[in-house]
Image (tube, rainbow, N blue to C red; front, side, top):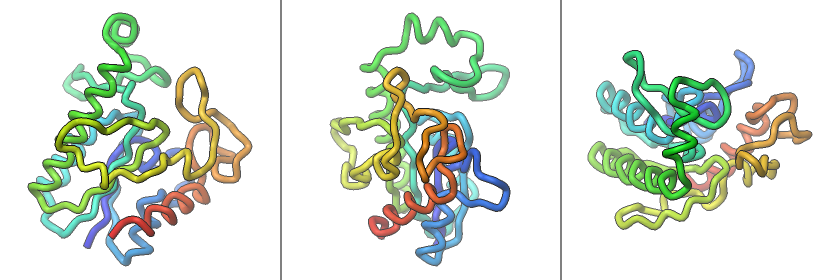
Length: 205
């Protein structure tokens, strides 16, 4: 059996040292599973479709998957023969300002999140993947017909850690004095990853 994580910089393990491990590794350890990390820094919910497609194309091992739901305000676009991310913070690519001025809305963000979670769940069903979902710091109302809400953890990652959000961006506040964050800027330290893994491990079958 293998435990695989998908998503953005949180499951990827941003700001950890070379010898430290993200929460997916610790979940796998607790279950006695192999571990593979398919997450990528700075990505959107849509990117997980590509991550999952790459995974199923080369794997037939029994798989339990954890999908990390990042802020749906992020979206993907194709430029220079690669899939890039529009996001309010971080690196900005051409079209960023126009997208957030003329296109982006909460309604569109939450619609896209629901559609892509539907797609992830369908792909997992087709490939017999035991799938679970953890929201990072949003609380989306998963209302679209066909979404299995029992696969959504009841708390967000930031609620598990008890850390603060920036009210302007709705993402994690930087450099906060939390035992689960220090000395990092925007991401959990290894103690924080172990805390997330501890809670998810009791939920994942």
